[in-house]
Length: 249
Image 1 (cartoon, rainbow, N blue to C red):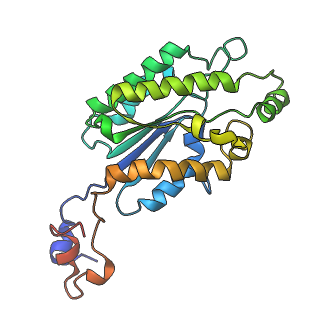
Image 2 (cartoon, helix red, strand yellow):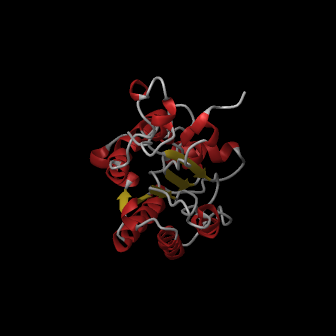
Image 3 (spheres, helix red, strand yellow):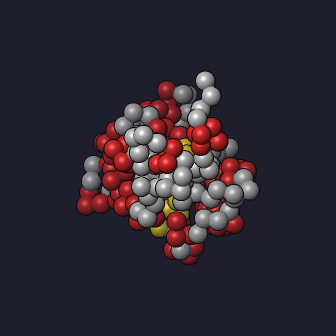
């Protein structure tokens, strides 16, 4: 059945702003039930699409190569973005050389990703760098043993990468969420934040979201609700409300 009047033309295109989540498995898994990315998407529904570009197992070297491809031509730059790498970069070179990235290169790769976002129209002020969380070595050592490996990460080493991430954020003018420090603050039992010693538990996901949301909120707070509230749609001629210039309500 043909649509009447203005409805047939569909109105002008309505572009949905995006928040880009770019990271490793901790980002990829963030849309699972109770995940921090899912919580962010729920909080931003009808204001932004939250786009998960988590790449399990990736380090900053590989990420810096693929980010420009993910951003495309910059025609629709993200309203905000997170960069969340380091858990794989900080793997011990003698135990996990494939994922390991030297500390100085890791820092350079983070800076390169911030520049790639800027080139695509995302100012540094709309970017959040997230440090890797602390590593609970007993649980992760058990995971490694189950796969026939020796312990391939150390929490003290992860801390070096977290501090490098903080330094890059300060140099580039981005916000930073220092999970490594926050989860261990005041002798916190951070093991409860981790499901296997490395990845986040439900409690860890909630912790991350609670600290990330204030940083994201200030970047997207000016974005309006997209399309009118249903009670405000013109009843007899809905196309006046839904297809005209009043898309934001």
